Amino acid sequence: MLERLIEWLKGCPGMPGVITADGSEPRADTASLRPKGVAALSRAEDVTGGVTETLRADFILELTFAKHGGDAALRNAEWLIGFQDWVRAESEGGRAPRLGTLGATVFTALGGSASAAPPDRGLCAYTVRLSARYQNRI
Image 1 (cartoon, rainbow, N blue to C red):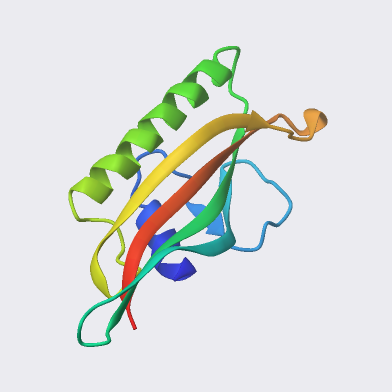
Image 2: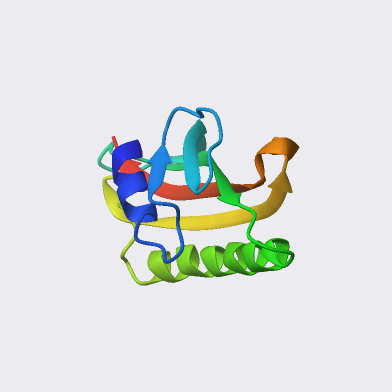
């Protein structure tokens, strides 16, 4: 699942080319995608005994960019808004990875905000929560 998500995220304009899944030490122009868990939102049984589960998987995307001049914070904030729009458009357009066995997966990117970065390394760090809602037939 993480490999498919990483490959999809690499298609976003301006996304760092290196995306790991290990939360390693931040370096300029890298990202890390970490799973935060899967929650069962609902479970329904039909008349034939089949069960459909609606699930939500949450991920934290940590992005690290090099500071380039005084307007880096503004550029990065604009990119974060654009990234959230890209996730929505990809999801609505059916281009996002499918996680479940039934229907499309609906992705949202929420809460893009600055996070702590080592001040002496000239880095800007941001965190975005990525959520995926999908269904499985059991």
